[in-house]
Amino acid sequence: MVIKETGPSDVGRTQPPASPGFGRLPSLTGLRIVAALLVFATHILWYTPLVSGDTGKELRDTFSLSGSYGVGFFFILSGFVLTWTARSNDTAPSFWRRRLVKIGPMYLVTFGLAALYVLWADRPTRTVDWLASLTMQQSWFSDIRTSSAVNGVSWSLSCEFFFYLAFPALLPVLRRVREEWLWPAVAAVLGLIVAMFFIATYVVTDQPRLNAFAVHGDLSFTQVWFVYFFPPVRALEFVLGILLARIVAAGRWPRIGLLPAFAIAVAGYVISLYEPYLAGTAGLACVWTAPLIAAAAVADRRGTPSVFRRPTMVFLGEISFAFYLVHWIVIMSFTEWIGPTRTFSPLTGALLIPVLLAVILVCSFILYRCVETPLVRRFGRHRPAANQVTAGPPAGSGAALPSTAHRREHSQNRRP
Image (tube, rainbow, N blue to C red; front, side, top):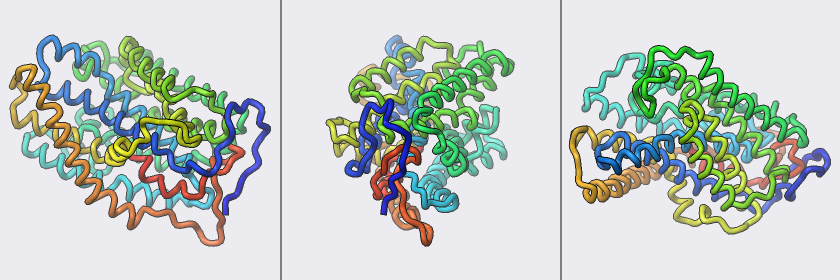
């Protein structure tokens, strides 16, 4: 049984409210691999000597922020999908169990693989670094050695862990926002994201200066950490995703097609390259991906054409969580094996990149099939509470989402 809640008037709606039919959002799954490849592009160019010379410099400059852009996309997507698939008869313990089953085993397996690499490469790693990384708490430390310890990309799971803990408390509050106040609420969140940039720039200490990433001694790591790693600040993008889901479900998203939304996301990235680093590397830049998420969801809901819904894209999106967690390990192990000073001809380097990508994809598929899928099927199902009926959409949307939505939660919400 699906309960359809009565919402405010239809004034301001630009599309019909969500209705049963396209319960899955396969385009969002397909988009996940695009975001994961953006992260891959940054790391393959910055952490391997495969592309050298002027060409390598230009490519590193071009893709210096693509990884952070992809991570921000994941944070917004997480809030969107969890809200879209949320059910009124769910409980916090049940939600936390499903999320832990979803990310925990894969995280621990890749933590073990990364630990082997760290020991083999003899990378300096302190006890606090090991413990913070093992427990998914590394993003709370404003120390570059801790926040990037062991598996260098797993810090984002520390943020996601915080989002999941907060979601059962956040969603009921945001569900109380009336439809006509959803866009003002989005504006308020965007204002807070802008405020975080100004706080990091003018309030957070700029000492000691950092020479890493694409920062050249004009910022401190504490400033970068505040806008990029600090979970409460990144949670603003998660909240933006929650509000975005409610807007789409309420039929209040403007008629922006998938192609224009994709163009907005590309343009937003180009703009981020010319912004101050603290703006271009975190939430202030990543909000440009929000229209793409909403447009893809609308395309799936209405059944309009979407290249991201094609089976190959959806499959790659399915394995993108494993891809994200394992790609850094493969890249860094390759660099350690050949030596960081090794150089290659342009042709050899260009051929080795797809070879490494293929290796990562094979590893991702194995992890997806052997770790993620069986455990999610066994322990990650939604179990309705006794004597409760099923409700559909984000409350207050004025529309019901398909009753099968929760079954797709695991395939559409993998983490960066």
